[in-house]
Amino acid sequence: MPSKRRIRWAVLPLGIATAVILAGCSPTELHGFLPGFEDPNAPAATNHTEMVAGLWVNSWIVLLVVGIVTWGLMGWAAIAYRRRKGQTGLPVQLRYNMPIEIFYTVVPLILVIGFFAFTARDQTTLETQTPNPDVSITAIGKQWAWDFQYNGSASDNADAVWTMGVQAVPAANGDVNQDALPTLYLPVNKSVKILLQSRDVIHSFWIIDFLYKKDMYIGRDNYWSFTPTREGTYAGKCAELCGEYHSAMLFNVKVVSDAEYQSYLASLRDAGNTGPINKEYDRLANQPGTGATTTTTKEGK
Image (tube, rainbow, N blue to C red; front, side):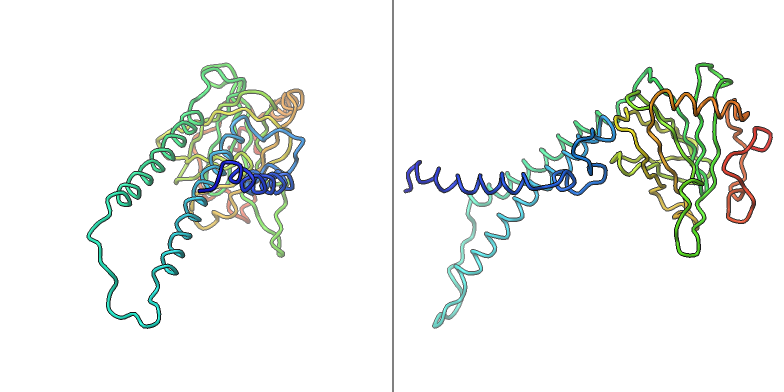
């Protein structure tokens, strides 16, 4: 039986090799190739992004270890118990092996319980809504675009401002004019609570770099609370097949300073986009060729 000294000398090179490999990894690789981690000197996109990435990466590490052990045992059994030259008949048959049966029953059970526990813990954090957020927004999905209402302090949203979007219209080469997409503005380092609603069918509100998405239903309100922690422009899209132009249901998110955010709200107020968005809506109004514009007046809603 090998001594502890020999075991340490065997493990040491493996540990050094692992450290060297990890040190050479980019932030994207260290976070499981998930989006939003390109800059090693910048914070994550939101206060929850690191947690989501950690759950994803650690789950895959555990699964890979299980896979390697399983594949190794399968390969070992195939080689060690192969039929050799001159052998005939069947090998000795065993009815059962209690230690092995207990092992392959208990270990998967522990893994399932562990995955459930960590997922439930993180999901509880993600689904906990901020009671008094710094910013309250209503995002409305529609075939096939987005409306964003920035709620004020009035209970009837009389002091709210809003913008109404149209769906993306790709050029002949497939490029999309990013400046024409509906854009949601968020202030950095301010708690945000978004009310998610749909005007027609099921949609899904997905900001890719935020590593989270939530569905939007008719007759049911969904909420999402988080704090954006890094300024920048992020891509968003509908993640639920919602009809013919589902792929054109795109939007952008701009995380800006609080001063720039307040300036944007003032520009919407100056344009007359005030009060709650009218609930009446023709889902066909935003199809290509109808002449719909990115921002409409209150009378034109």
